Image 1 (cartoon, one colour):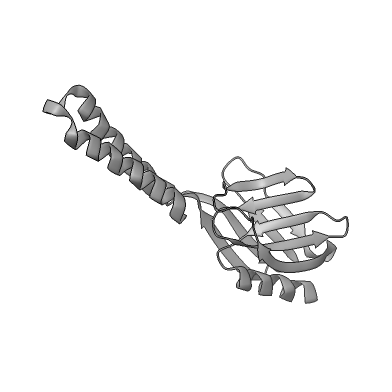
Image 2 (image 1 turned 90 degrees about the vertical axis):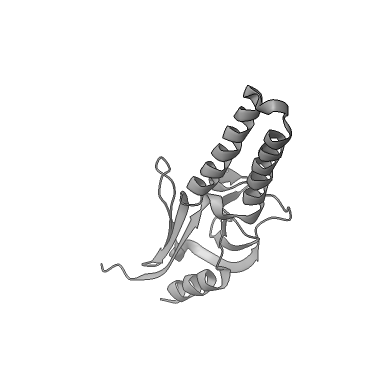
Length: 160
């Protein structure tokens, strides 16, 4: 069976706007506290080091892959970090695919294969998601930066 990839999306942990802002504000606080410490005591030097460490961690997180979404061969494959298992959703068992919001909250933690209350969630960043419902009533919520393209690819594969 030939593997024809219809859609690929990679989502990275450190590229969401709100966590980047939080980390940069913490780093700025450390640098401001360092600047206003008297006579540059040892504790003041520690604040400067912590500020630089926060910035370095932010840069590293920008390149850390959270999960990859792949639509091919009538299935959606979600491949996560090193220790996570690959999740393969067969599109033959999907009865409904629709675009929706991931959550009503502003701040959401990145999750991979989170099972709660009859839903399985995959999310890194953004507000939009794809809602896939299978024959058993199980709901898959897949967060995406490019929801329209992902929905189009899933619907195209379901028609095959």
